Image 1 (tube, helix red, strand yellow):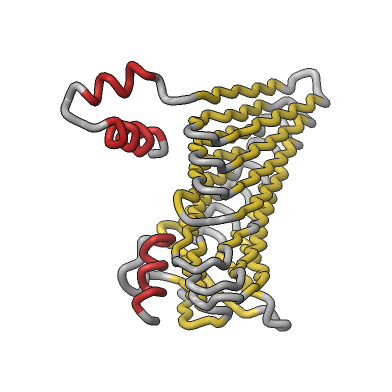
Image 2 (image 1 turned 30 degrees about the horizontal axis):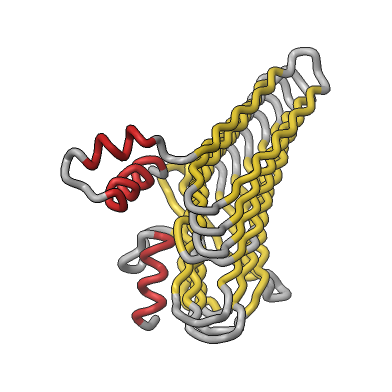
Length: 305
């Protein structure tokens, strides 16, 4: 990899070297490195459109890294990655995509990830998006994540997009069986004329299933965000969605809650708070010697952690 690709990998996957455990590294539309373990197998799909990751029953304390980087202007791709996680597993999966575009053509990566999570397994999934480059071409990311959880499984998802992505449409679909749990923490910042759409549809199909979907975001300049979260309660379950956002300059944010209860014991809640940074917060930090701009950055950095 060249220095640009290495920098992108550090941004999206915190990788400063080849990761331990299983991994598949992809750059400019090609696989540039792969490793499997005794418990985690990675195979290319026959048609070359992506990879299949198979994790054996009982696999614990192991990780899979599958980051993607693009440094060629005008490159557009859609990749399908399927994860088959066995029963009684406890694993970390790190994905993410970084695009550096210094040209005048749009660059785009669409990662379609499908997770089939076995009974009583726990999966922590981290997906970070990042854009850089001084070209006029856009950096576009339109990921789709599908999660199918068996009984007693837990999936914790960390979705972060903090810088440089001109356009994104993130779609997350989930279906949970009895006792399954889904936790999503989304962090998002847009600036300039960027726009970001986040769509979640979670179907709680089993008794005792639960979902907690929280988005924290900041919209600066003239950027636009839409958070569209739907939870469907088809059983005795509990669901919660939350949009907690800061608007600055001429930024705009739309929160669209959708709760559908199809069972008398479905308990579903949505919360939303959107507004500017409170003046007393700025004043308090400025009395410590910070400029207004520095005080704003301190508040935003703490807010998005």
